[in-house]
Length: 112
Length: 115
Image 1 (cartoon, rainbow over the protein chains, first blue to last red):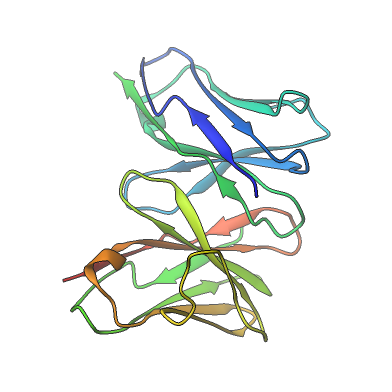
Image 2 (image 1 turned 180 degrees about the vertical axis):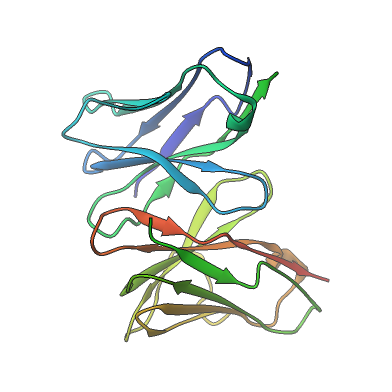
């Protein structure tokens, strides 16, 4: 089955700086890569996703890149704000009904 | 976006009792729903796939007789933890894909504490 690794497990940045989280996946058949933000005591919330036919996608301060050959994908958050502090999960899946395999999570702390 | 609601948000039960958690898709129909379990400071692990009108599909290592799943309608799936024990204490989260998109929407989770 699919295996998703995520690094780093914790990340502290100063407000205004950028944060980068990296993931690798094992199943070359995976074609959908969502990123989720999870706040304490809540369910995951989709923040951005990318499909295997696209190399990069951006939404305001958030961007995701995908390298299919290397099976790497990354989340980039620019101009970080304290409210960006949360746990972020990458995920990978194949198929139309979104049975996703999650990465191990990154706890991001943005220091004011 | 589409909304998935879980109930209850948290529950405390005594060891040996059963607990039912509901997952509802509020504004769309979901023939498939997914149940995840998340232990503290860990990732979400898929437990089972709930299929409307048919039996659930369980992941390896998940006891189907302990975690009963019923997907009785296109908007409701239930997870019943039977004979709960302290080691079942966890955060249970459901998700449902909206057929009109490939995105899966997650519920807010249910914190189960077995004492």
